[in-house]
Length: 326
Ligand code: XMP
Image (cartoon, rainbow, N blue to C red; front, side, top):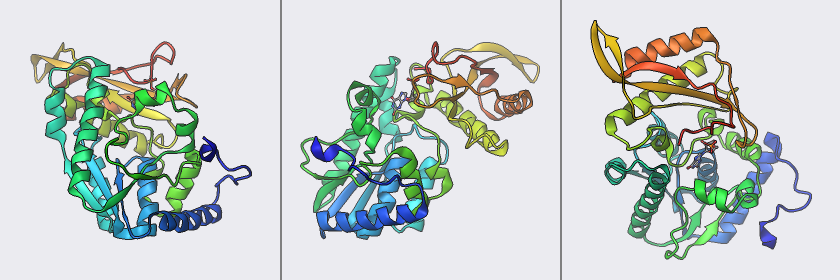
């Protein structure tokens, strides 16, 4: 437990100068730890794993093997961004695994939320392990553990984790961010040259859009979640809300209601908008989206997203509503 405590007197990394110092120290320490051995990293494209990747690319270059598993539940444009930033711009050794069909096949017909989470988590480990076994000479596993993960470890974290350590692959652990708080990780990421869209992005659950396509996931309804989410994000960015609202996304319940399109009655899904502010995700308040913006988002979603005829706005704080719908 002793080496899991933030060193006493460690300065808060709140400037580029301090971030540069931290990066230089970590590069030296990773080099010393791993030498010329290879390190494997599950790179989701989230803030923590992206910052670890950028840091280790600086330290050991192609000896870092990044694996990006596309489980088919990512937001629009996310897998493409990971490939663009890490393979094309940072010249990383990146393995891109399109596992969408595998995940969606396993999830077919499963409606219970915790069961969905378990399937996604277990399949993630399976895919990651398969890729790990194809690699030769890997001796270390890098992880984007940050200090709150250590402080909050226990049932809550376990519930939220997708993936995890493949237990029978005996790797040494490389965790360069383990004493950093989230805001410090962002400063380090920015200093390493990661794009703002990656460094300042809103929290995104491990099971991704899977818990926003309520009940049993179908490909057409999942597309409705992905497309409506992309429209919401685009409109929030245009309205200057993107960096301001803590978390915002859409949900598509497994229910249809009648509407009218081109003069014909048609049963289609509703899209629910959720936009909340919070400090610690334990309680949350609802963002008061300007009505004009809501009207614009509604018009776009109902005309651009296939199979959707209504848009609802969830104005429920947490409690009584949770942030996600399942
Ligand atoms: P709730 O819905 O419990 O969400 O109010 C609180 C925060 O946790 C995120 N969340 C998850 N994150 N795996 C994750 O990594 C999960 O299964 C999961 N479920 C909820 C949620 O997006 C919000 O930020």
